[in-house]
Length: 99
Image (cartoon, rainbow, N blue to C red):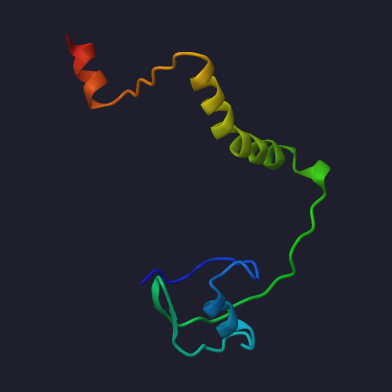
């Protein structure tokens, strides 16, 4: 039982949940909805229009999206080009440092 889902963009949920809320009025409880995550009761507490933001107003979000999108391919390319050894600091590394 998680409770409040926070703000959810229309069309971004499970199709059965979307169907359940499509005709709900604010503060009206849905019928029981079954999804792969379990059984749910859904209620729309508040609605607000989505914000349209310009590309220019979101440089950090755009940059992070591009980094996320391209990083796996870039790391794979580097691994093929150079001998890459990944060392993660963890329990084994801590034991080596103690010696």
